Length: 99
Image (cartoon, rainbow, N blue to C red; front, side):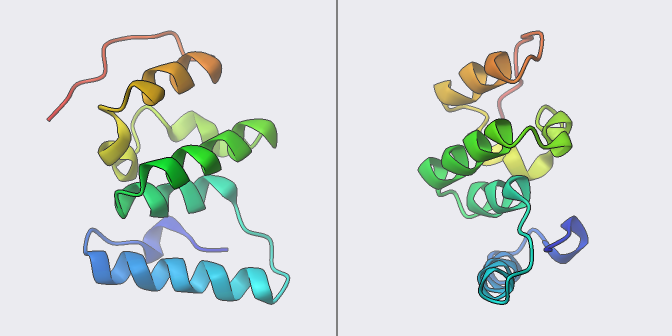
């Protein structure tokens, strides 16, 4: 499983983490959907990030609690779907600061 410590702010490191995720899935290792969503968000691939967030929600993964404060989700915070997703995930909505 790709851990947060393996993902850095640089695009090259994020792409390497994404490659590790793909290799791990080929080897039959479990992939945490939230981690995949983080990678896609960091790559600014919003549609894919939301697709994997939905999987996180559907799988009832406990990692969803990080959503409001996770810096790897900064690229999708301004997207209207983020606010909708916060509500869906059960967070009491508060204004999400934009950069």
